[in-house]
Image (cartoon, rainbow, N blue to C red; front, side, top):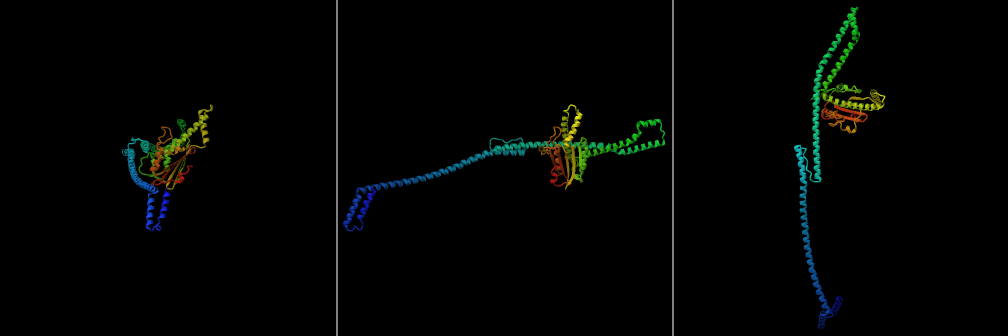
Length: 473
């Protein structure tokens, strides 16, 4: 229909062009045509459609405006919802943060209070409460373990201190006793030793008198001759000087032992003084002489060492502890080896116990190819004196070698060792003398202790000397 309407309208426009309409008749005819076209059913129907389209457009425009207003309102509502949700989220997050912080801070505060209380009161029986299974509880568990560990270490330290005080008191008592014994023995020994020369001279005078008497009176009576035969005067004349010489040697040895005891008893020195290390070692070996008579060989390789600044009594204790440990190790190795070979030898019923033991000793000597031996070597290393004490015993396993200087560590059976000897020895060498104590050992070969002592007391501990800290052998 629109096509028809526009075709008729175009044809009407062509008929009523201004160039064709000039006269009043033509104008009136043109008005009639236009009126007829306007009142035609097609035009009226088109106008109706136009009105409907205008109403539809207006309605759509109205709806469009309403939709725009609705969209704007929805945008505003969405913005309000968004802002409200953000505010609500922030509020919820804040509440959760406050709750979480309080939940974390409460056990942390409890743990902190326990730690402060333990520190202030030194009460290691306190324990931090554990109420959750999170990182805070792990921290509380670690703190409780740390408190228990510190408590255990303090107990060990207290026990160690008590043992060291007891050991120190024992050594002090032993020193006083030895000093008293040495003093009491020294007087009669000096009396004996000092009168031996006079006794020897008097006996020589008596024998000279007897020889002079026999020369002046060759014809002795039978009673004198019989008494001379009974006492074997010729033997007495030869043996009595030897007897006096033996007494003199014994008295001199006793004097040396007394001197060693007196030196060993000097444990309460307060100031360092010149110490002859060789004399210390020799005196210690003299005191241990009864333990060195069991087939143990001592080899001394002394160099020209000057006197060092130190504490003689404490150094006696150092050498005594190390040498006693070496002797114990050699005796134990000897005993176990001989026992093993003796058991093998006793398997044959024809052998007696004595024969088996002698054969066992011989087998042991042949098997190990060495005699129990301690080698003591001294040398000067720069501004230090180095003392090496080496034994060819069974050696120390690597696991025990790391712990031999620890307090209370011992491999000896109960009652045979306190585990304090080497610990105190290291303390004397390194803390009291600013020196170093090094131990190197190889199982089946032996053990070496290296003692480094400054000749002059330095202000700080000396640095290790590479050539001395190297291989033991």
